Image (cartoon, rainbow, N blue to C red; front, side):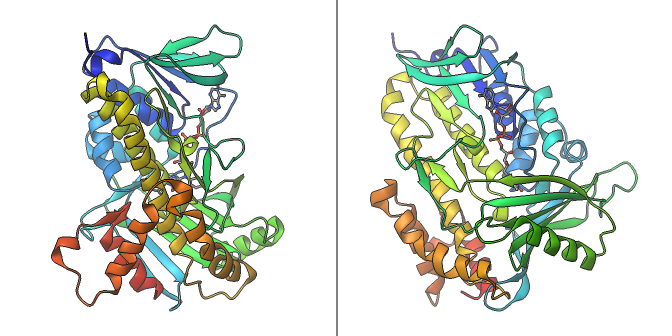
Length: 424
Ligand SMILES: Cc1cc2nc3c(=O)[nH]c(=O)nc-3n(C[C@H](O)[C@H](O)[C@H](O)COP(=O)(O)OP(=O)(O)OC[C@H]3O[C@@H](n4cnc5c(N)ncnc54)[C@H](O)[C@@H]3O)c2cc1C
């Protein structure tokens, strides 16, 4: 007898309790049609979550409503959130001026600025799972599923395992596509007093924007929440020392009139796309699957896409299609993540108002390696061609109506706004 998708998905594990693992566990709970499926949510409480990730894309607004069944207003308040209508760029590009990358339709579509900690709490309330606090040593594909091996516990077999364990410990070229045409690799995070506060009992309705401010060593994000304002200096530790970055951060906060801050963390990060996100039984999601610096807040939206697509396929397609579906889904996800990477890397291609070592490197060395890194022969997908098509469209005197809704991870309107703002 050939099992339907949902029938073949009885035992599911989610490993990791950061943003990605929490979305995965809540999604399984909400989307699985049979209540008697078994979900294990596994994490090692001694390994902290990354805890940053405060910008999002508009699809999260609907997604959280669907997962939690709460009203938009109460979700926003639970997240200590504000409504993000886009990203405001300061000092980027050839023209060295301020411009905004709006979500479209402009001034209509919004995402959240949110507290990552509160997002995880909110999602846990919507998850029905057995919780296992243990260190996972390995996740292996086995006949008809995947096996999770633990420290100090017997292994368990599942029909599907979401691996949301965060950044890989090291990158290897056979497993990861290195996208260091994105020129940054470290963040300094500070928390400052809130600049947006709830008035009365309702959520903050004012339109807000993530600020992305070009600085000599990279750029600074400013994200307004109702509990604090989050600041992060994104730079390249191979080019700039932590002390000079901290000194420039101090100068920036001083100029912005910020009276005090709490130093939160210094976070090194890789820029990569995993070549094997999904094999039919193991699904890497979140920072385990791909990462690029937070300039366009692409991580949560990527996790949503990975989880949504894999669950949709597994629940709705007969298991007889699994071996054929898995490589197709994998290639689609790899291509999509790489498109995000190219979009983000391209932001650096026109430099900024600073003629510093960082910006010369970003523009002339890092970005000029993108064709080699994203070559279809290296990546096995057509992301570079898709990206080139978007840039070609922008050069046309008139863009045909049939092309208005084209996407390369983000819509043509995003490419057009950035090209106009950056002057490239
Ligand atoms: C500076 C910076 C800014 C960012 N800003 C944004 C932003 O604005 N918007 C956005 O969308 N994203 C942003 N991100 C990305 C953000 O990190 C992710 O959105 C998000 O936190 C996903 O993390 P994760 O759940 O994949 O992994 P993590 O948060 O690292 O969670 C990993 C989980 O796995 C568990 N674990 C790990 N190893 C094991 C093991 N061996 N056994 C058992 N459990 C294990 C840990 O206990 C933890 O629960 C930013 C990232 C950085 C570095």
